Structures are given as structure tokens and as C-alpha cells.
Amino acid sequence: MADKRIRVLLVDDHQVVRRGLRTFLEVQDDIEVVGEAGDGAEGVALTEELKPDVVLMDVKMPGMDGIDALRKLRELADPAKVLIVTSFTEQRTVVPALRAGASGYVYKDVDPDALAGAIRSVHAGHVLLQQEIAGALLSDGDPGNGTGRGNSLTEREREVLGLIADGRSNREIARALVLSEKTVKTHVSNILMKLDVADRTQAALWAVRHGMTD
Image (cartoon, rainbow, N blue to C red):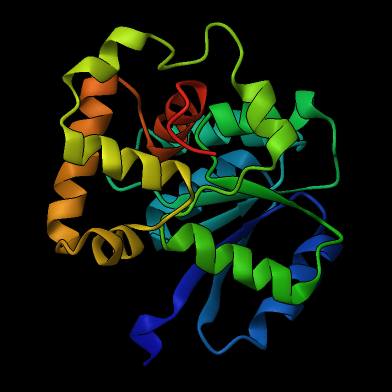
């Protein structure tokens, strides 16, 4: 079952933090830490080499920080999901990371079980946004705020988009709508293209802005 484990890369400039994260995760049967990096540049290089499923990324690091690393990671052919692990609670720190492509964030004092749950969640395709951060992301100029873009969505695509905004994974959407996962993936690709957004996070934000979810 080793091939079913979620492969995780740790990117943080503090060795003690990386050691603590590794200790948390090594007791999880379904999670495997495949490597560690001390800055963003090394994190990008190791992501290309090791191809992890999920990258745990700090924001503030010397050299290439987490934001620039996220932008580099999005250029990869098959980018890993990125979960920000930060000690900063300010929106001005977290929001740019989410705009750069992170799937969510947790704080460094997170409970170990909650951290493992967050990794499983983003790996499954969820977007982890707290209400106040989602509100900050919905600012003027955020990608996908044009109302006209939604007019080309089919009724089924609007259903799928609403479930994306509710944090559902492709598998959960497939079950809810009685569709195959392959069909859901096709709908998601069409939604991203029609809304002219880069990823599920931006699609979810578009849906929140336009009242398609609670």
C-alpha cells in the first residue's frame, strides 16, 4: 500500500520546524515525508525531482520566499498541491500566498491530527479557506470577478462550480451528482476555461462572489 500514501515535501527555513512536522507526520499510515527544503528555490527544485503530492510551504523564508516559490510551482506541468504552514495570522501574509496558488493554509501550532487532515483534504482537491481570508481575497481585481463569464456555464457546470465552492473534492462531486470522476474532471476543466481562472481556488472565489454558495 506504499504507493497509496500521500507524498509530502516540507519547505521551511527552520530545521526545528521541519523536524517537528516530520515527527507529526511519520506516525500517519497514509502520509510519507519524501524530502525537506530550507528555502523556496530548493523547494521548487525538489518538487521537480521528487514529484510530491503535497508541499507544506512556509511563507517567510530567506532568498526565494514561499510566494515566489508558489508562482514557480504553478509553471510545472503537473504541479503539487501546496498547503501553507505559517506562524503569521495577518491577512497581508496569507492572502498573497493563496492568490499565488496555495490550496489552503494552517498555522504552525496546528494540532497534529488537524495537520494530517488538512494534507488529506488538499490532496483530495479541497480548498481550505477561512471566512475572513475568503473575504479578503474577494477584492476588486481578483481573478474571475467578471459577471459575464458565468453566462457561458451550462447548468451542470454551475452545479459542479457550486460544489467546488463548498469545498467538495472531485470524488465527492461525482457522488453527489451521480457522475464519473472523469466526467467531473472534464466539467472542472471547462469551468476554469470559461471563467478564465487558473485553478479551483480562483473558481471557488468566483462562485462565492456571485452568490453560488453559502
